[in-house]
Image (cartoon, rainbow, N blue to C red; front, side, top):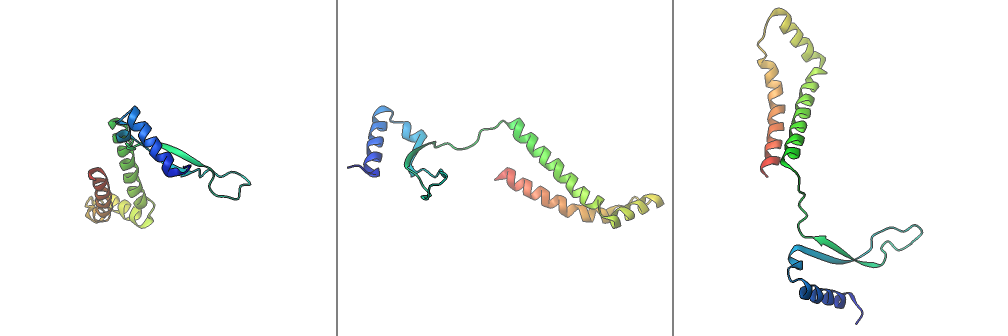
Length: 129
């Protein structure tokens, strides 16, 4: 027989004989080649065997992930504050409060806290799960 099932059975037997642990670490798929060839009317090409490692989890250093998280948080905080910095009504109100010496910014905190709370909730859910 010259079909895909026979080929897979033969590969399984050969791999089991050579390295019994191979199938625990790796996998292979018998698929048609999805490469597009110019001028070819058929979407898929000849069959190919695709070899993959079962562990597809990316490995990165803690320094890199911590640095990228801090950079993302810093950029998000700047964006949150920048949205208020481009709002002329808020800028005028802050300048007026500064001019008269009124440093009670509770009205401003009420505007900023929901943005920071949403940012914190999203980041916490990302880090925890």
